[in-house]
Amino acid sequence: MTKRGRLFLMIVISIAILLSAFGLPATANGPQNSGQSNPGGYVKYTLDLLNNTLINGNFVNTGKGMEPWGIAYDPSNGYIYVTNNRYSGTVSVIDGANNTVIATIPVGSGPVGVAYDPSNGYIYVVNLLSGTVSVINGTTVIATIPVGIRPVGVAYDPSNGYIYVTNGYSNTVSVINGANNTVIATIPVGIDPTGVAYDPSNGYIYVANMFSDSVSVINGTTVIATIPVGIGPWGIAYDPSNGYIYVTNYDSNSVSVINGATNTVIANITVGQRPTGVAYDPSNGYIYVANERSGTVSVINGATNTVIANITVGIDPEGVAYDPSNGYIYVTNPGSDTVSIISTSVSTSSTSISSVTTPTTSTPSVVPAWAVVAAVVVVVLIVALLMIKRRKP
Image (cartoon, rainbow, N blue to C red; front, top):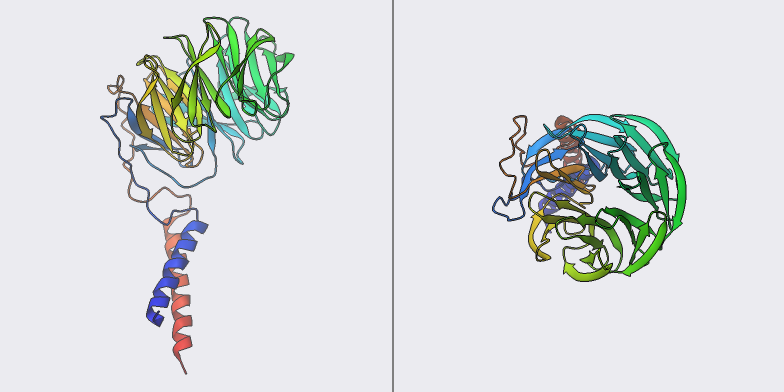
C-alpha cells in the first residue's frame, strides 16, 4: 500500500473511532421504510427518549444511555409509563395526546416491569436490582415495597385487587394487596419466573418460568397447574377475543398458545429471533410480539394464529403496550433509547401530531456537532503531520 493510501486509511479509522467514542454511529441511520401497506400497521412515529424528540417514521438511534424496557398504559390520565432500566433508574411518563415525555420519575435500581392498578389508580414499577416495587400516583412515588430477589414482571388481578410480582432469583411470586401496598403471600413457582398475566375468563394468573420451560397457573395464592411450553418462556398476554394466552419463548423463537379453558398448548407460532414482550390490540384482534434480536414486531392474527406481518422497529425491542385512546401500539427499544409508535391498519386515521421532526441522515446526539467536527479535524491534522515527518530523510 502506498503512503498516501496508508494515510487515507488511518484518517478513516481515526474518524470511525472518534464517532464511536462520542456515541455516534460510523454509518448513518436515517428513517426506515414505513411500510404503510403492512396489514399489521407501521411505525408512524419514533420517540427519542434521550432528547424527548418525536420523529416521523422509524428512526434508529444507536445511543444507549437509558434502555427503556417495560411499558404500561394508564387510562385514568392517558399517560404511558416507560421504565428505563440502565443507569438512570427512572420512569419516563409519555402523554399519549402528543407523544412527548412530560415527566421523569426516579424509582429504584434497574426498573423493568410496570403495570396499572385501576382499583386505586396507581402504577406499580418492579425494580430488578433493588428487589423492590415502586408505587406511583400520577408522577409521584408514594411507596416502596420490598419483594423477592431480582423481580421482573408484574400484573394486576381485578378479581381480588392483588398485584402479582415475579421474582426471578427467588423462584417465587410476591402477592401485594393494593389496598395497603403490603406483601400478603409468597408463592413458589418454576425457575426464573419472568412474565405474568391475568386471564379474566377463569380468574387465573399465568406465570412464565424461563428456565423451567413452563407456565405456572395460579388461582388466588395457589399453583393449580404447570403447563410445558417452548424454550425460555418470557412474555405473556391474554387475548379476550378467543380466550387464549400467548407466551413468547425467547430461546425457541416461537409463541405458545394456551387455551385457558383446558390449560393446554393448542398451537406454536414461529416468530422472529428472541421474542420478548407481547400485547393484544382489541381494535383489530391482533397480538403484537417484540423480537429482540430481529429488531422487529411480529403481528399475529388471533383468529388463525398465524403471523400476518413483521414490522421493523428499533434495536432490541422489548416491551409492548396498547393505548386505546389513540389506537397506537407502543414498543420500547432498549438498544436505541427510543419508543416506536405503531399505527395499526384499523387506526391509521388517528389524529396527527404537529410537533414532529423529520429526521436527517444522521442520528441524534447528546454531543454538539461542532465538538465532534473539531476533534476529527485535530486528529486528521496530527496524523497528516506525522506522515509528512516520516517522509523526510
